[in-house]
Amino acid sequence: MEVDTTAIHVGDRVAVRLSVDYPDGWAVVWPDSLDISPFEVLDYVVAGPEAVAGGGGTRAAATLTVTSFELGELEIPPIEVAVADPGGTVQVLSTDPFRIGVESVGLDESGDIREIKGPLSIARNWWMLAPWLLLVAAVGAGAVYMRRRARTRPVAEVEKPKVPPRPFHLVALEALDELEGSSWLERGQVKRWHVRVSEIIRTYVEGQLEVPALEMTTGEVVAGLRGAALGGRVTEAFHAFLARCDLVKFAKLRPGADESRELLGVARSLVQMTSGAGGDDS
Picture 1 (cartoon, one colour):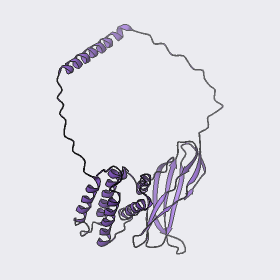
Picture 2 (tube, helix red, strand yellow):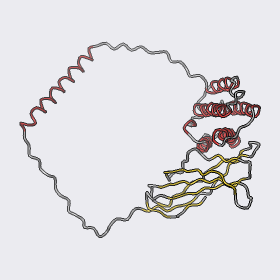
Picture 3 (cartoon, helix red, strand yellow):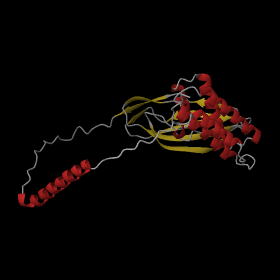
Picture 4 (spheres, one colour):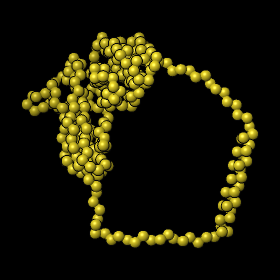
């Protein structure tokens, strides 16, 4: 990661350049969005891969334009990027954090300080206000009448029977069974299939583990799962699963039908390992 400065004024733009060198035949998955609080991402441009000079493989790069409206010694947190070998094995790379000092914009000390003027008086014309006062009185009287009338009407309250929600793990397992019975893979709809299996697990994580995964990037989901205290092994299993789906969705990786169906077993294992955690009491 390269940053073009170590000190800015509040609101200034900073260019952050990321690059990944990897062997030919591998794939890189850039995050679809980034949360680098306390900095805000104003622009995010990913450049196409290019050959490294001297036959050293391939390089992928991205440029972020960021700013901050907070003051002090702030830190750009580590940014994670996933790479996969031709066999589909996923590795996650992470940048080092980078500190930037953010200062306030200086004031012009040469300017004169003007005295505060007192409030201006407004000439009153009671005859002009009279129609408005009558209108306010009429509206108030109408409101009192409507309130009294509403009190005289009986209000029938009918309680609807509450239907208990279905356990999240059962909903997820049924959705996985339905996906397994689809013909998407046979029709070559590999990306659609992986988008759906990722959506099923993200929906399950959102309901069962109370992590809003449908609105998060994979890196944000993993951070949320770490906060859910699932344990390192389970969290990394979720990470590898979601990163594998991202490679198909964003990096044009196209695994075969058998390899794709193996993800169903992984997805079912993730659900079964965590079905007793979080908000599902069943």
